Length: 323
Image 1: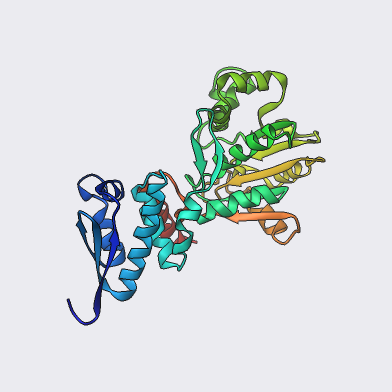
Image 2: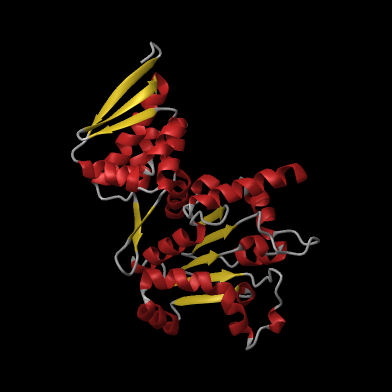
């Protein structure tokens, strides 16, 4: 080993530590070595890390945090590994296990829903503290899913009397007029992600019962006009497809005891070119208004397949030179 390089050791409790961390046939081992510019040797009772001192220190921090998570029963996948290494490079290695271990809510089947990124942690904290929250970011960052989780939690804790989920029925290349049925059946496909999230947290029977009682309402944005919504948890999804007028109409439905969450992706606007996005406009207008939180999520907060992160980054790079 050269004078500029060092070696550090992490003790193992059992070989099960490395099986979960490095994956089948050590498929994740290469990720650690490439991302941290180190060499890693696995022995029956320990892990040896070799390389430049800063790189070895960083790699040891990440491996130690992820091992602690795994020993608490947290599964480790490639997405979590990449994100943990990114955090360490930003000087936030100590946050790895704290962020990824927070339970936000439980699904109907008892599965724990947890924050997986720093952005998600900030988003959930804002949902707890503010009456009006904007969650803006690309697909797969958990904007809608986490908002629904918090809405169900607030309902179960009797903080609100009802949950209202809404989306603008803007066609992304399709025409509502060609779909069969009445208006509700025509907009149902646009609302399907909201139905799915609610049913996952409540179960089908509870969801149906609450819908029949009027405690849960899933409706197109046009149905919100002329109403004052009190003691409700209201989520406006796909808000980038609202017009400026629709957004103003929606935000002024705010009643006593209500909380509002507005989610959207400003890179996925399906409005005609001559129409301004109400979400883009609202964020500019309300940026410094007291009592409103605007959380911006990025590709680093994507919790779907890691390829989704790379796709989003590729589109961002392509679009930037084009304005």
